[in-house]
Image 1 (cartoon, helix red, strand yellow):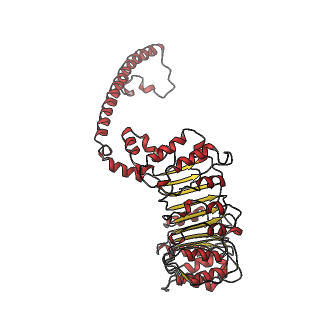
Image 2 (cartoon, rainbow, N blue to C red):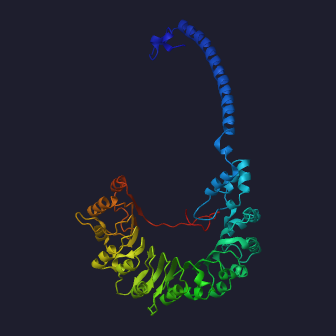
Length: 501
């Protein structure tokens, strides 16, 4: 091994010494031999490196042969593939996700994927995306053919204005989907137009279980749909953009009401929502309801008989409602299994007694959209006392009452009765002021009880908590966030029309 100290000139290294002509000749002669020696070493390194690469490739190839994935039975691989599918929406026509992604790993996996019907039993079809490329239309049919005899889950976004409504290509694509209507199970049609509704009118899927419709379609066209008449239908969702009143549209639909378990009726603009009296009509018809969501328009209450909804677990009221009407709803309708309740915007001067709801529905775990201004100090205290099972609470604070709420929810020394003892998540919307000492006491007292998440949404002051304060809270094991809503326009993609994951 050669070291720099072996050189007769080593004592001159890192100095300004200038060698003589004789010394230069000695140095150059020595460097020639050293360069030759270095070249030999480099050649040997290259040779050894090539040998190493060959041996490594040999090892890797044989390891791959005995790897566990290669030895998995095809039925196990299929189960793994199915677990790769989206769980909250339908699969999309993109090689970035399963099932198409699974066809691009290797030939063996491609064979398994293409022969696994469950992988192809759901599809999201944005017409704009499909119609931009002719090859995508037969690809939709091929996708559904691979699903074999599996029940189908479809979500369809019809054309934008740039495509002529009722165009031949769009009609052909819809007809291709209709060819598989005997296996339709869960179906959603978005951006539904009158022309497309007429094309759907005669389709009667015998196994349809859930149906969701969104678009500018009036009641007469929807009433003519065979889709809504099938006896297997259990869940119906309608988001109407029609100028007609929502309840006029819904009550004209020939649904088999006593078979329905999940209903969602929404519209753009509270002024076109359901009258309260028609909400009661729907509830009377649907005694098997498990979930009910509806947009309301403010109206004067009308009397009705008491009723029981023994299976209702979710009640979401949107829009505007008179406080008296909401009180009558709670008084008249027995909902012993209610777990989730969303408040509408309340009108009128009368205050609502949340304690009555808590007493009649003691299993409530999620309360949403509660305006603190609707409660007096005493009624707010009584309300919190009546909710022993509450796990998530979402409140609107336009009157600077967040500090009061947190104080009530903070466990007190030597006091056994803790308000909402199972609370795990609190969301405060429009918070305008907050006392730091109150927040600290709330967090310290609640973390020991299993409280896990605090969110301030659309607060008046986006800098209400410093980064150091947030970091301190996070270090205690609590998830805290300050959120401001933003919206933006997205380009056309295979995911068009789907909610964020």
